[in-house]
Length: 219
Image (cartoon, rainbow, N blue to C red; front, side, top):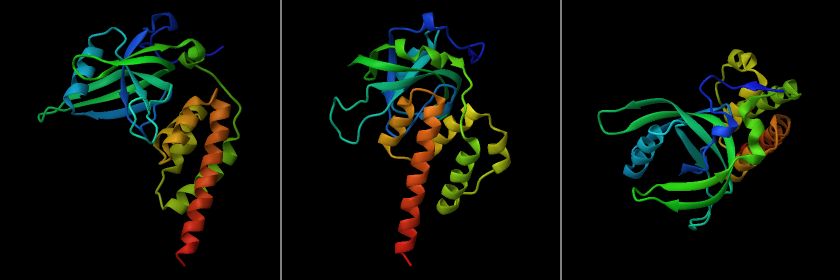
């Protein structure tokens, strides 16, 4: 059995059947993760105001595929609770979403203010609401990560990485690394932490091989 993620997170029975969704390719949110957002479009300012008026304060993050079709949204996204909020003098809202649970998109419509309101189901993702432990090969993940960051030329606080517990480490890396949209979606849809960690290692290894080949071709 896992433990609840935090005192302000909703119970599974409290999750709504409709939530506003923010389509943003490349912006991945995972349960337990934290995603800062800079909101400036009028329709999404309205979306944040409406979400803040609800007890759950949830917004669904969902990616679209690499095309521009209207029906290009992926079917699985992740809802986040607005856990911090501030306003700027130039009319923007700075918010942070704390990842609550993944959802499956059933239907989507535009509301009068222009943003998307989605009908969703949470049934297959009930386990997202609790912290669970999983066996991952952390040492191998760190080794692959060192090679990836070295090839990319990134400066990294390794002490901080070593201090991260497994779920936070895997979630943060999945969210911040510059992966393809399809790769981020695959990480989101991984059934559990162990599967997500395995996929993360595979993506890092493929990216490292590609980066190594590109650097070799330049010499």
